[in-house]
Amino acid sequence: MNNYVVSQILVLVSSIFISCSFFTKNKKNVMLMCVIYCIFYSTHYLFLGAFTGMFMSLISALRNIWFYIVEKKSKKNK
Image (tube, rainbow, N blue to C red; front, side, top):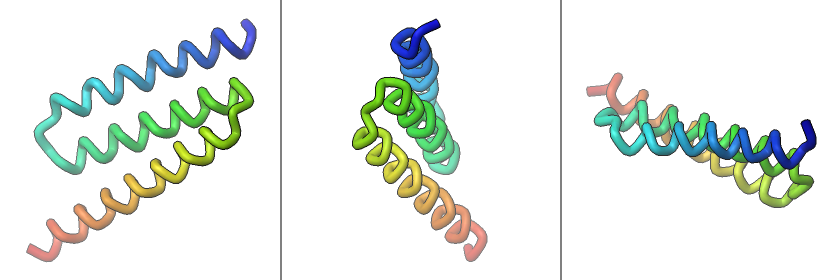
C-alpha cells in the first residue's frame, strides 16, 4: 500500500472519532476523542509528507490534553 492510501485510511478513522465526539455528553470524553482525532490526523499528514500540518495537529493534541487535565483537576476540587 502506498502512503496516500494509508493516509486516507487514517483520515477515515480520525473522522469517525471526531464524529463520535459530537454525540458524547461528557466534556472529558469529548477532549479525549479530540486528542485521538488529532493524533490520527497528524499521522495522516506525516504519511503525506506535510510536516507543518503534522506539527500543527500535534500542537492541537497537546492543547486538548491540557484541557483534559484541567477539566479532570477541576472536577476533583469540587
